[in-house]
Length: 421
Ligand code: SAH
Ligand code: SF4
Image (cartoon, rainbow, N blue to C red; front, side, top):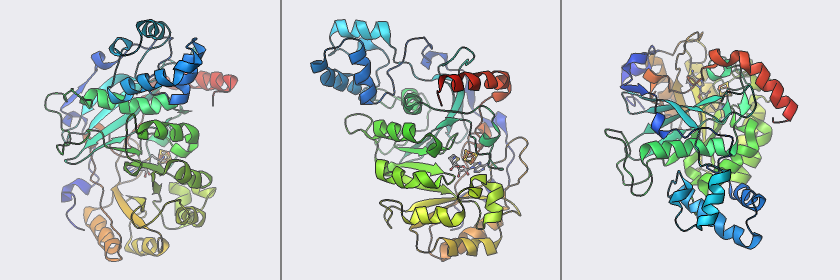
């Protein structure tokens, strides 16, 4: 499995921010945050509840939800005035009481390789919350466009090689904030009937959708925000709306074992496991949730994952850390560990971030590791680092919390008081 990425790319490449071809605020795409709630990103039940709460007769609600749903998710409407088949009086009522605001784009960066990163500000929820920020990354290829979405602001889990884990401010994203990331990407890429991508944008050219795949590999641990992630997947896969295929949605977890089975049953999505080590003492350090659910328990949950088969393999992510987990003995241990599980192994060259204590394994070592795993019968692609120049690669995401830290404690206190999380 040699030669999947150019040899130089694996060598602990430094982060070079000024390689980005563009990095600019995108004021035009951002809708103003107002006190009115947004309907963009809501599931059907929440839309129905909103309409019912605003006096729409019960017998009309199903039909109205269907209309709004179509405008939101098939046509990408950003204003109620576009919804021409919705009665004018209802449009006025909606306009007076709601918006179709997406998360606000604070910054858009485009990498030399076509990867796009959006820094998104979420609507404020309490007096001291000036709007938390999350990041979302679009990775275009010839035949697919993958959007890497965040499920939480920050992450509580502190994996020692991950930038997101160093962020203090943590909260769960709402369903509309998860779906909103997909809407932002589709808005910016012109991924709706009759629209076109921005001049010079790199998008798939196979005639399919520009956003065809979703990976929950941005900020946060998706299974610590289970209900919202599940409901967001419901919106993303709705056959009358966004229509994404469940097999093109992958949820990555550090190993929240008790939630794995119901993820499979409820959503039918693909599963990825951040394994990163082949023995418990090392995994305890790299992925500390291992102290709660060890490797044996985690792999048992994988064997039992509903729907797992050779056609629906589980992806095991393995970050290549120089001198830490990259020996060939560990490659052999990995093969042994995964025996009997329909698996593919994604080797991820470590992406450095300011202050990280690890280095990326040497390229030759990554190739040898990959060859060994491959010759044991596993697909073992080395994940091409994308968007490194704009800090958009795996584990490099972190919102600008330095500015937010002072407010973080106040926000958390307010959330606790509200019982919000
Ligand atoms: N919290 C979830 C999903 C988000 S992280 C999880 O841990 O699975 C997405 C992937 O990026 C995970 O496999 C994670 O371990 C990996 N990752 C984190 N930091 C990284 C880094 N600096 N370099 C390469 N991969 C990293
Ligand atoms: Fe959280 Fe995943 Fe990063 Fe670990 S790797 S700190 S679980 S985002």
